[in-house]
Image (spheres, rainbow, N blue to C red):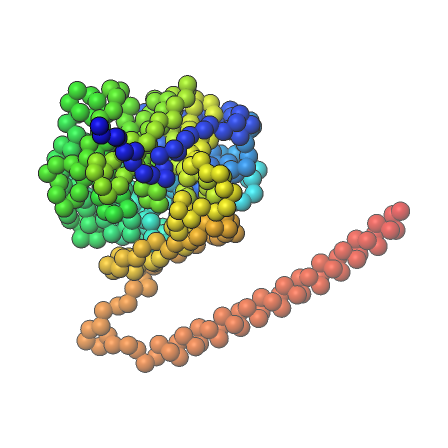
Length: 471
């Protein structure tokens, strides 16, 4: 008689639990736009949610601690002239968020640590380059200020937010609307899915498709794909009979999936959220009231079903907290922010442990807020793994860091050397003269300010004497 051996895994008993009512965010008018994005972005400091707004697009940004009922006059981030379709927090600066809109623009915003008194209407920078609506945003995982956008014009643009320039434009790789874009672990490759039912792996700096698979799922509904930690791909889609599927692919052999899981029959597109530290993928369907999660391993059958978190209310969208924002003292391995029609509810995934000590096996070093590369270094061909931090003592978000945008002036570019156009011998004295004149001007301005201060003081004294005289 053969005995069934239970698979050993520390994540076999992961369970989900909705936060108590007083930990939810109430009275938020979540956007009703028909677009398959998550409508929610979260980091260790803030929760951002796309909301309904008259006369343009807006989203609300709340400090994580501001739970309970949200005042109907709470300031919004407004600036787009059409609905906001996607938002994404910068992984290297917890106060910077990017938003994409139906108005064809991308805006990058600096969120203050204090609660603003009125709506935030001025972005740090507006990026214009798409000819149709922009529905997808994704920051580079390791390079500073590098942002990807994908639009309804079937074009992917990679921007340097620090200068406002478009670094790369991939405009002839997709014949139809792009449904999803995902960076790999070090940001050297992209995985994209498209309305033409093709899954592509792209080297953005070469502008080439490295590998592709036509119809990874036979159904007609949109696909999604994410990279795993070891460079494989997880895709979600539909079978010909409209059954929802999860597939694991090896990019070196795209003929057959390494593993294929079939689930239920439903219309909702499955949004995959992958955690590289635990190698667990969480599947959240729009309109579903459940979160399914699977562990991806090296041994067959490679994708193992773990459990399903179920609730009564369907979800309008979902936010996924980065690992550094979790409570390690409670063995929390994932936290979701589930959007209802008028509220946002945190859902915590926990591994049951008896000990209160830090669990090394649950929390390997995880990507921190420091970038590994500058934008120019990445563009020149360099790659670097994320800079890791330990969560042993918990994560403390760094203080407010300002994003500085430096617009490059084309007139500052070096002029080509040609006949009679070598470096001028008069350049150095000219620079010296300019500096001296600036210093003289500063000196004169200082003297003027001092004279005005003396005059103001004298006038104030005269005013005091007049007031005393009338009394």
